[in-house]
Length: 129
Image (cartoon, rainbow, N blue to C red; front, side):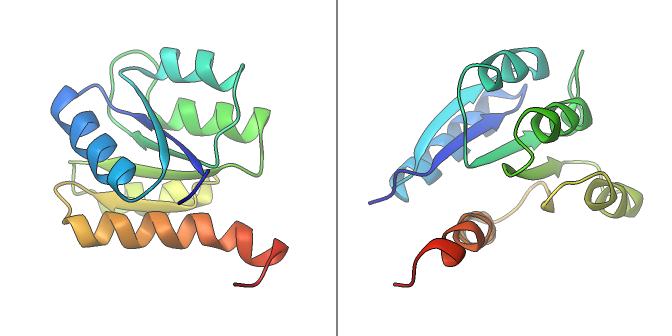
């Protein structure tokens, strides 16, 4: 259905697996990794349409991934997620170049809707369907 590529970055295996299954079932080409370091390595060799990354991770965190994504490929969309309900994180994330922010736990429809919206923003410029 879609050739849109999504990279999921989260140190929690359960969350990665949940997002992977959900987004793959929605027709996206999905890859996953468990650390910011691993994500940055993948980004240097492959381009994605969307990176969904947890903020709080050991080593390189979601903000580090965001910075690296925007340095290498400024047009890639980045969705930050966290289980910590800090309002400042949401405001700070968009100020740092993120395209969206979501709090965990989130419901299936929310993540589908946000993912679809972020990926469709780019395609609307190129084609009408």
